Image 1 (cartoon, rainbow, N blue to C red):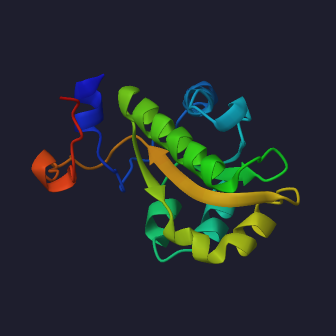
Image 2: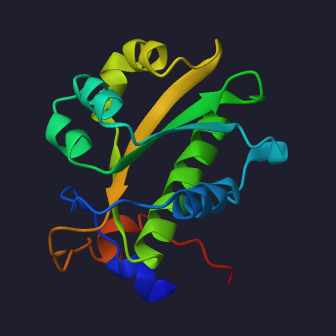
Image 3: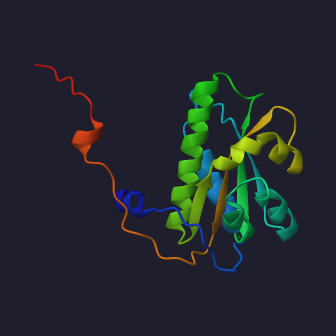
Length: 168
């Protein structure tokens, strides 16, 4: 598991090969196993595979080429009716998305978390015909990778740990 966390990368180019519905359902199910405050599970999803809808969705972001060329996108929403604490629920959505990205990687697929599309949140919600109170949090584009992943790098721990409080 640790190696899969280290080796996961954002994939923005996909082959034309389809992703079957069972695989998509598995990815979403893995997302739903993320922790959430009071186990309220505040997430909802819309799966988009139809090319015309992918094209319309792509018009809502500067990263249109990623959505247009993906065989599937999963829009991830916060169900405000299930919410009990906005900050905690948004954190839970982030954990859900990370679970989905790790599942995508584990299944030999590639995916990318698109957040820039949030600038057109209302248009996306209308386009995807979600109920009132359901708020866009991100779109995940995924498919079979058509690009190689890079090595990746991260800051050293001494650059990110700002303190250690040890008992003496």
